[in-house]
Image 1 (cartoon, rainbow, N blue to C red):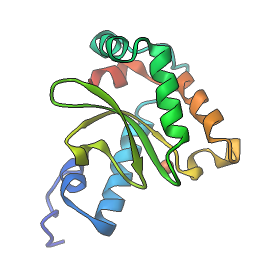
Image 2: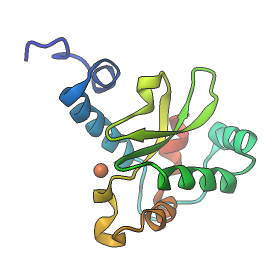
Image 3: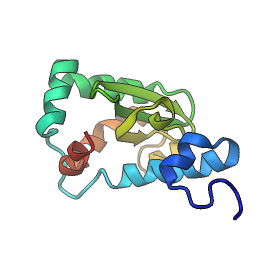
Length: 148
Ligand SMILES: [Fe+2]
């Protein structure tokens, strides 16, 4: 109450805040994006313009997945790996620590995988890379492709 963020949307708070406000807003936004990227019996491949952009920039969807998984596996400590786009539609894979989101770099998040240990420990213990490989099987590519 009574702060400059009182009536701001989450994206604005993430772009402009720091410290505890950023951490809370960032993790809320990140998990909103994350959990809406999945569906039962998901998986398959990206669609439409996103599929074209991935193929032209990464060579193929499999190559992109390989790079994305490698980036996620090597985020040091807790954080996120993101597929993001810039204003011109150019894609990039962004490693972010803690509550980081590519919005703070002026990019738009398309897909993010949570690599905090809490996201996989119960099922995979310390095997983060195994967890990342499994996530592709539940992606809702209708939702994710629409973010591009
Ligand atoms: Fe999480």
